[in-house]
Image (cartoon, rainbow, N blue to C red):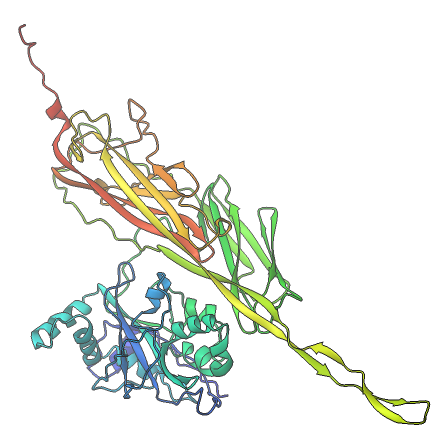
Length: 588
């Protein structure tokens, strides 16, 4: 095997060295690895160099949501593809889409400007050429034509191109391999290959490991975190596990502007938790050799003086699995140092500094009758990232008995002087472990209701006067195939308000019903005469929509948090002074 060391080109200025068709505001966040392929099984399971392509999806930059149906590009005629899984991107699968084969005819496009070599084979793939290609103006224009343009009219294409590169969108690029497996032609991305191998309990890896688990997923990965995926820093020359491929490999990103500064956000890191909260902390256990039930693995978490053991972990060769523990955070802000150890395999982390924070620190000031904001202009509700579905899985093994007779011939002498032979052999079990990956999913359904406070005397439905209070109710329900021992309910929600342009101040909601489903409301307002769970609207707020944004989170799974971005509004019409009249008492 030849190991190809990819040249890292991280600076946007480098792109100015390419011909003028490459425009400098585009960043190609793509790197690669891989190596020699070896020999496939002739006639049934093989891949030939050049049988590759890419799947491209336009993604909204604000929340990493796919907004177009993916398209596939390749240099060759692939009309003989019989097996494929439809047009789904890595993000679709991350959001809960299932891997399902389809009988629909496979569709693809052959670009006029041919693709560079995508999948590594003995030094052919060149990451510089790949980056240059997907940041080329003509190529981006062609992608805009296929994904956004409403027709082939030059005006529509030009408008689509302007939309695509206006900074609001990114491109998700995934390598595709066109392979022959079991005698049938398939098209699959790296993520689809890993998901398919899970369904086959390692059947694809057993036949096509160098392609499906090395060169295809390592054809593209991120140099820096993007699209909700981490930067990949692992081996560039060895086969990877299904979990690693699904979580970190087989993708590149192209963006059309510099990253905006990070907005104020209570969620700042993978291991940042809130005080007095049930959380799930997970690590990945990787193994090169089989960990079976005869000698299972044990992972130990040590947290705040307590020890948690996860036992009877089994993983097939060259695979991995998430291992996790559910625990409750302290009631005061602090850093909790977590140590993790295992008697087998290797862990993704052995030491974790978990930040435990208190979000109840930015309560809005009490509005007064003298407040003014004559120049107020309403801003749009922020669209923060959502993670409404997560998936993970657990390996199990069952012994497959296979009895083989082992002969042991012994010469036997008889009293009459005759001799014969007798087989005193015995049966031996030469079986093997059959592996099953049980996939779990969890999805968050969250709803929000914003209404005038019951003490607003002239409110009607969702119409009220400014100066009165509003109340909120957020409900969260975590559902799916996961048992309760794997997950938590929704526990935290933070409300942001239009008078503060949805920043600077917020209200941490009170968990009034814990568990699953759960309910959250405003905490009792210390300025309320009647101790109401309200937020008072400013007297000066203009007539129109008064929309509150709520970010709901801390619904934990082994694969990370479930997070929902919610909003609701009331309509302001008039102000509290309209309900008061000062004058002489009417004569009776």
